Length: 107
Image (tube, rainbow, N blue to C red; front, side):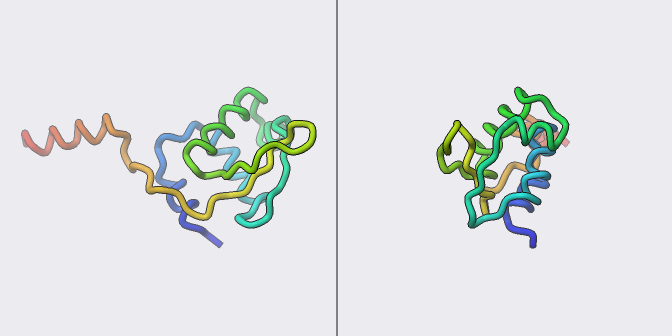
C-alpha cells in the first residue's frame, strides 16, 4: 500500500542517493505502526553503502520526517517506524524556483 509519505518521497529532490536507497529498502522492512530496531551497520550492508553514509541517510530521513525515531534501544540500536505522511516537499529546490520565476517575469 502506498502512503502519502511515499508519494512525497518520490518527488523530493533534497534526498541524497544513499537516503533514497535506504528508504526504499526500509519501506519493505518497516511499517507505520510497529516499532522495529535496526543497527546502522545492518542497514548499510543491506543496501550496499558505507556505515557513514547510512548514518547520514538515517539523519536526513529523520530530519525530513520520512522516518520516526523512537529513541535508542539496548546497545544503541535505532528504534524506527515509517512516517505515514510528511509535509509536502518542494518539487524544485528553492534556487531553481527563483530562476523559473525570474524567467517567467522576463519572458
